[in-house]
Length: 355
Ligand code: MRU
Image (cartoon, rainbow, N blue to C red):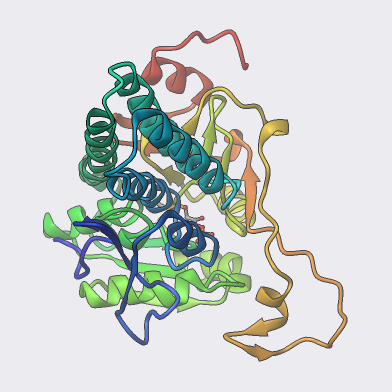
């Protein structure tokens, strides 16, 4: 079943067209960016959000620089691309797909720059960005094929945040097995955590699944453990913004609490993510968990709910240690425990370093 939404991000001639996720679920409207600053602001302000979608958007931001550079020589174009890449890397710190996508496009630009031909650099940048977007959709479909095996008729599946089509270029990560299993004729229901403070679960996951005709029930974040115990939850699927080589998962704030509740109640919990979300080089001390504006907590959609002057701590993500996970669903297949070993095998890397 295809999601009832168009691509989250696409390149159309000389502009990047984004679904404006800040307007959902009220309005399906689009933001058009013609320069990299607009793209960077769209990432910062969460017009576009979700690790794979951010990566593809950043790649397209670099494509805009290339497209706008028709009168430039190779050196000038490379300088502009490096400056744009630096700007994009400053937008959000936790989701590794951003850095991965910028690096991939810049790698293609640097290889092409050896020719000294600006046209060749332009072509390399635009086609690498297009490839990143296309590959994301393909990876999600493969994730869906693997992950659908986990879903059985009559199950209740719980999820947090939005790891749906809107968090990717199309099809979603967590939603991919959901769409595929539904297509296979399985009938089940989903519980979505609202996901304070930005409410991606209420505004986006609930909207997306409801629009696709999949039964979805919305709960507040604090009701997760109670709902697992009282209503019964068979499977928990969460996204990821960064996964380390030992299987440590960084994802939306609340994921760690959910993993603890899953462990306490014996519910299988999987992180669902493409290989572009794996960061095989970093260790926990290298990862910066983004802290966002206090207003996200002290207000709800612009209405103040907390006293003026109150102290706020607003981490956007948390870290779930690998031992709390049942496994990780990727486009290469489902990786089970011990994650340090199955990840090493999936990526063909040594099992000694980093463990
Ligand atoms: O702050 P956001 O909305 O960008 O956070 C997104 C998430 O945490 C998602 O669950 C994660 O990126 C996985 S997306 C397929």
